[in-house]
Length: 152
Image (cartoon, helix red, strand yellow):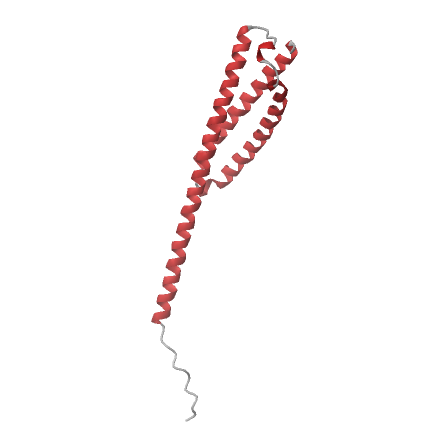
């Protein structure tokens, strides 16, 4: 049967998870604004680095939450009913934020992919234009008739 200290630990872990997810959500929204803009690559890389640190922290928190997933929630001892309600609400908010993070990641991936595809299309057009210009120049060059090697 879980004791009060275990429930206190659960509350702390849910609070930490909520905090990390809130930060990840903020960074992911910023990432989406930056995605697909060539002039913000260094900012995007900093955001991705910060997100990686937070994801690692979230993974550690989730591992610490694993034992609580095996417990019967009704057997936990709470300091008050309001504390239980608040913890439950934060846990639900965490799940909502995770779903929102997944959606933002999908949108960012789409934006970057679209930008990449547009750059590839432009590069193909430039190459085609360049190839056409070279071909046109070759058509307008005088044909060499050889050298006259006779001595007069």
